[in-house]
Amino acid sequence: MAEAVEDIEFRLLLEAVFRKYHYDFRGYSTASLKRRLRQARERMNCSSFSQLQDRVLHDPSAFPELISFLTVQVSELFRDPAYFRAIRERVVPYLRTYPSLKVWVAGCSAGEEVYSLAILFREEGLEDRTMLYGTDINPEALRRAEAGVYELDRIPSFTENHRLSGGKSSLSDYYTAAYGGAVFDKSLRRRAVFSDHSLAADQVFAEVQLVSCRNVLIYFDRPLQDRAIGLFKDSLSRKGFLGLGAKESLRFSSHADGFETFDQAERIYRKRGDA
Image (cartoon, rainbow, N blue to C red; front, top):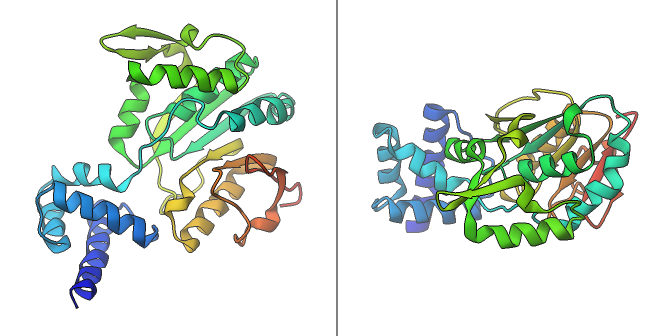
């Protein structure tokens, strides 16, 4: 009985968040979302989801705190180096054929993947013709992405990832150590735009040649995964590329026929020319 009541409260909380703040978590995977909301409930000293809902509806300062629990902010520069090596060695040769490029990093968290691609594209001589769009629904993550400052203790793993990705320079060329953190070169942000965008509620905003959305779809239920993949397909130019996370696939998507597998190991797909 208690579990059934909690489930009702859970659904009402998601509906309240959507109606008041227009953030739609109703299509997220229930098990993972409930786990994170329980953590939020405990941290915010609420005894139930209903009490948490009351806080979120009537205390404007509560919602930003809740968002930090609902969005997963786990990333690093050149995370999964083999993925970036595949982009560098297999995808970039095709991207070179475009006079101008647009790249969309969906669910960019604190910007690590955007900076990774900015560095990669600079090393490959494509920086000046590329615009990078990093989108997320977490305002605090977007502020951190704009700042481009990361903890110094993360730099050794960033450096090793960059090397394994086929980096053609030293990662230290791209940041300076200051105020206890690593501040990435502002020139890397010259061709980058960070903005709010929801895969659950928003529409296509640009035609791009590469979409990278890794370790995001695993938190969605099947219909929302399908919606997101449809957005990616609609945003990609003819023969554009889609990179997904190692645990994600197009296999069960209604949009699967619009893509061909380009690199199975790294989950990189290419939009069909007739899609």
